[in-house]
Length: 137
Image (tube, rainbow, N blue to C red; front, side, top):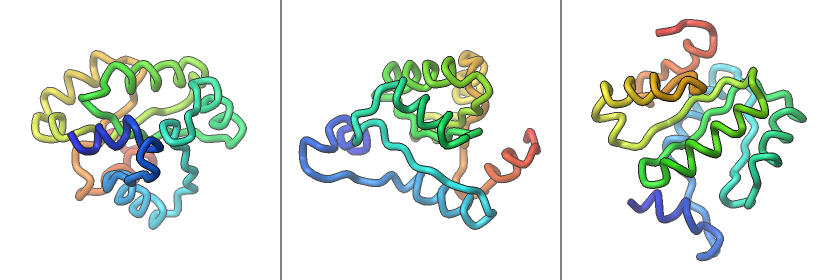
């Protein structure tokens, strides 16, 4: 719940709280030589159009995003609309604990969201780099 509360009103309290998921994933991907760009639509109050334009301008091919069950409608709607504006963009989510603990639920969710490319279920296995290199497992 804390992560959701912080994500919802980060500037109201004058601070932001980086997600451990993003920090770990960024470290793993940087170590493997991936070029990383950061966009925080919540903190910077960015619209879908603004995010989509930055993605195009920066030549981003893959978007790795946090996803929260508490803000599912907002997160999914936002990401789907970004994908609509950038059809070639791969979108991968770092889910909250409900999908990590219930992988069948995550797989079902992935099948329901045909615009979504992948869900990372374990940050400790560091399989995201393999996926980005073309390994579908």
